[in-house]
Length: 325
Ligand code: ADP
Image (cartoon, rainbow, N blue to C red; front, side, top):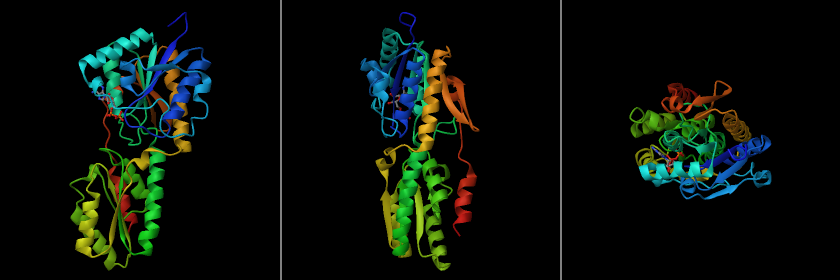
């Protein structure tokens, strides 16, 4: 607090995600509207450790909602995983005189929030990751845009693999989680999907057997979705071609899925979550994670939120199989 005026910090950390800019705008405009100062911290935790900051005006966040990436830039910061780094980050938080810090990022970034909270900082997390792999929330900013990018690729690949009667194997991002791949498989009508969550249960041999069965039933093209966390996409494509004799092509989408104009869903959640995070600080709430569950936004206790676990519903895979006959 400076002369009775609250000071709110905001940073983006970890992997970038479409919609992070809309979340920054939500935080900045809410805080300014309520008479607070807003400090933007560049490049995630390393910017906090180095005191790499700028004060935000309302105009600084004009025309950013429709842009992917993050105007604050983001980084992975190994220093934050050390005692010295965390202590320094907490010290800079105090020197800046912040009443609260909004961290927009994934579960790694939230572990950084916990470390800062344990050293007296007030930290509010906004789930920003394309991977949807944060247990305490049903939605993470960036997921919808990344799925739509993946689905667009699936549809294009389906056109060409259908024309040439080929098999397409397409790899989706998602780190250790298979949500993007699974959604693209269900929504894109894939014949098979390999995700970390069904690793060991669904094998390469089962995929090949399915393709052979599809051919015997007269199906002339096949689409197989593979999650980044399973990998081996090029090897799998070669194995399918070698064993079945069906021409098979591998496509790895990679970082294409991180960029692009954020969808309406992402801009909506990001704006709401940015607003709610700023309001938590203004209302004196401490150490929270903003979440979206069962159709409602929630502000959860940081420690409780980080102790939650979630599991992918088996039904998704069953639906891929049922609908791909
Ligand atoms: P994401 O936030 O997208 O999951 P990362 O897992 O790479 O991305 O985490 C982003 C950053 O969060 C890391 O580079 C590090 O600075 C910080 N972080 C991750 N884990 C911890 C931890 N256990 N303690 C403190 N900071 C952490």
